[in-house]
Image (cartoon, rainbow, N blue to C red; front, side, top):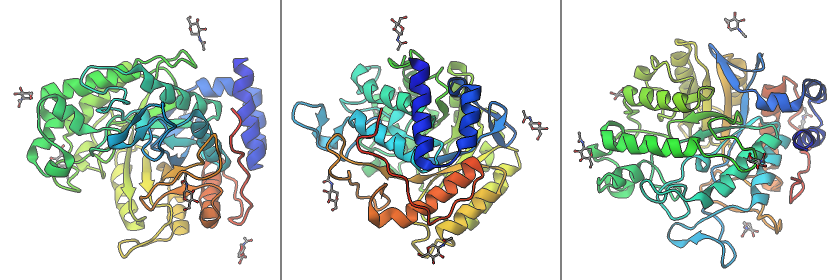
Length: 414
Ligand SMILES: *[C@@H]1O[C@H](CO)[C@@H](O)[C@H](O)[C@H]1NC(C)=O
Ligand SMILES: *[C@@H]1O[C@H](CO)[C@@H](O)[C@H](O)[C@H]1NC(C)=O
Ligand SMILES: *[C@@H]1O[C@H](CO)[C@@H](O)[C@H](O)[C@H]1NC(C)=O
Ligand SMILES: *[C@@H]1O[C@H](CO)[C@@H](O)[C@H](O)[C@H]1NC(C)=O
Ligand SMILES: *[C@@H]1O[C@H](CO)[C@@H](O)[C@H](O)[C@H]1NC(C)=O
Ligand SMILES: *[C@@H]1O[C@H](CO)[C@@H](O)[C@H](O)[C@H]1NC(C)=O
């Protein structure tokens, strides 16, 4: 039953995209099950799946574990002060089907790892574990596996968002700091330097990575679906853009993640490529975020990372392409640069939303100006371009940017 369940969605998704029939035959022959059980590994600046180069392209879907955009029906868990609620399982499955239809291979998902400080979190308060929070996380990890997608998961966030971040660990240790009031207070660096705070962050990581998924009986540490953990999202010190994250802290967190999960890759989540981190052996992948896309900034980052023969990843970018004076590229030119460098392991746009499943009558909206909704006619032309890039990167096949987008039913089949 497990085997059939694993193969079916792969077939379905391949039929939907109309591509990759040959590689699918190979997967079947090889056993899709076997491929899903294989970890992504690194050889120099190349990531490999079963000895063959693997590229990670797809979407940021930050709300898979906990959302802030939907008021649930009365009686469902809801934390009103932060508008926090669990997404429906149908929303999670639809999002996976969309990434697959777009030719994606991975998802970067904040709330599968960042879940601290409110009653619906994995860790509402220091040392307190809320098992209910794992329902959506387990389902998302399982559904990613069913769809043949890999996950990259940040462990905390630089900001005081609804899903939590570094300020929770600071406050738990008695530092009276909030992002709104204190983001430029030098004491925020205690997150990296104070032994009590570092120990409580590591305890959180232990709780997360040793959790057993009810759908697979695998811990997150064991499950190769999560191919990499990231220190955190857009980590900085007290000055915006300072990249002031101690290399020693990156090393310590990386070593701890690898102690718990020896086959996991590890990503430096510093906001920017910090030269002093290049020598940290524990880091497998370096990355940066681009608002708006900028080829000159990308080339500068790549030039640094290439010197240590490790892969580079564009973790976030505005999918609308150039939208301001600081942009030097449209999306198509940006993608060309990413496709042409052998040191780029992939990229994930910001950010994907779907329908209000199970109703399926409307899209869930989010107001940051970067919300992509597959099936929204206003986004279709741009989505075709993104899909062309994903298909090219993940399969080598060139499709027309005019190709009709495959339909993804709502609700999507489980
Ligand atoms: C790893 O990289 C080295 C150097 O580029 C290459 O010679 C070797 O074949 C690669 N190994 C695999 C398994 O791809
Ligand atoms: C770290 O934080 C704890 C808790 O607030 C405090 O007692 C301790 O003095 C701090 N350590 C250093 C070296 O500042
Ligand atoms: C997980 O393991 C338990 C105990 O061995 C077993 O009863 C259960 O059926 C397993 N569940 C799955 C989904 O494999
Ligand atoms: C890089 O990290 C080091 C600590 O390892 C820090 O001192 C420095 O301020 C950071 N930023 C830059 C731009 O190097
Ligand atoms: C999202 O916005 C669209 C356009 O304004 C609207 O039609 C739709 O109902 C909204 N979705 C929800 C769930 O309210
Ligand atoms: C795509 O469509 C545009 C406008 O509809 C057309 O100008 C262009 O030639 C088409 N490109 C391809 C490759 O079919």
